[in-house]
Image (cartoon, rainbow, N blue to C red; front, side, top):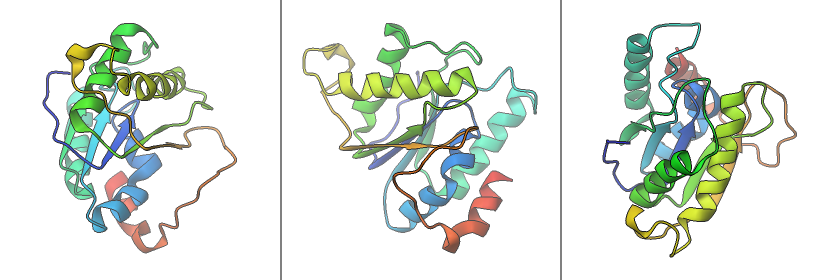
Length: 178
């Protein structure tokens, strides 16, 4: 991850550009309206997706970032359809967590049909824990662990443990996803 990301109170993690928007746009709009500083982070560029080119997806992600009122958007540069929970990938996410220092991390739920969604969820679990350890990769920044790690559903239904009423911003979410 070459981009320097600003400090934030909320870090939203997605496997591909558009996953954050589909899974979280309503919640993020509410958080932004409440004054939270939001940073978005995609694991891949979605280069193997069936819908759109990388350039189109980049343009859509940029527009969605602005509509969500996020401070910035970064990308870990992991390979689409090839995300693995390994040390190199973990270190990229640990560095991003330590750099942004969020109180809340929102990432994908592991119960999903897409292997990248499952892998990014597992990667988030691992990185959240390791980012808080003083002696884990001290060269990646000062230890930091988000206080709360929430997960959003993807392509399979899950039994929610927290539901956010986004009815007040449903039209805004639809616009962001468009």
